[in-house]
Amino acid sequence: MSITIRNLSSVYNPGTPFEVRALDNINLSIGEGEFVGLIGPTGSGKSTLVQHFNGLIRPSQGEVVVDGRSLTDKATDLREVRQRVGLVFQYPEHQLFEETVFADVAFGPKNQGVPEAELKERVNEALTLVGLDPSAICDRSPFELSGGQMRRVAIAGILAMRPKVLVLDEPTAGLDPQGRDELLDQLQQLHSRAGMTVILVSHSMEDIARVATRLVVLHRGQIVADGSPRQVFTQAKMLMDVGLGVPQVTELMLALREKGYPVPEVALTVEEACAIILGLHRGGEGQ
Image (cartoon, rainbow, N blue to C red):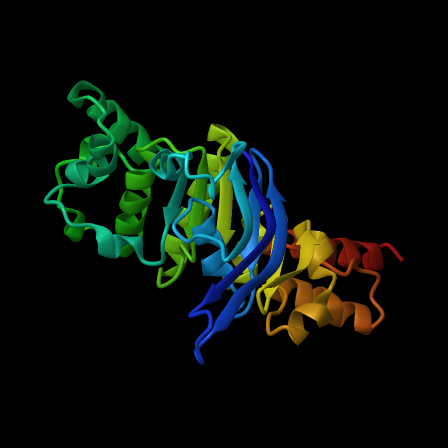
């Protein structure tokens, strides 16, 4: 399932003294099965952009096409589109409200008209996808769970509707390191095992470097970079100029290069950086 953005602009409060151009002539295509990281400083337009992906916000100008259907076409069923493009907002656990985990995860598909006989299968499948044991958790109150577990239950509620695309806006915000790592691992597995298209909005360069296969950088409502994490993070000066940065391990590689060490410009993970540094050390021992 693909998403195509053509000449998209979005203006808040048009024609008033409070007019703000949140997006300015965006062109972007996201193909089926991609894992895209969307990054940019606060106010760059990230959250506004992803809310166009399933029609929650209508364009001021331009067009959004999902699976070949224009979201500006009045004949397009936006409810169906929102079932196919699931959007997880920041702190989605704040939207949990049922007495049990089962009831919360089942809420979406139940409203879709999924038969009662199929609901248990949907709930079990969704909880398993986010790394939770349905038999151990279904009857518990969601408010008894850890923050990371609550976050995953909320995501399971979206997955139970079986979307083709999963969009997450700052999904690791407020989680402790263990909860963050577990959630990122689950998102990687959703992408690799279930073949799901994942679009991840994040301020964390470390998180993005760890999981995304493509990065799109927004600044002042425009796309200023689009490529693989390695390609984008080589543009360290540009990222710093727009108020971002690079992963700390990439900063380390840049510092080593400045001191004359023969290392690549970019390392995306701690494991990769360790392997490079160990290789230097072993090479030095052999001389």
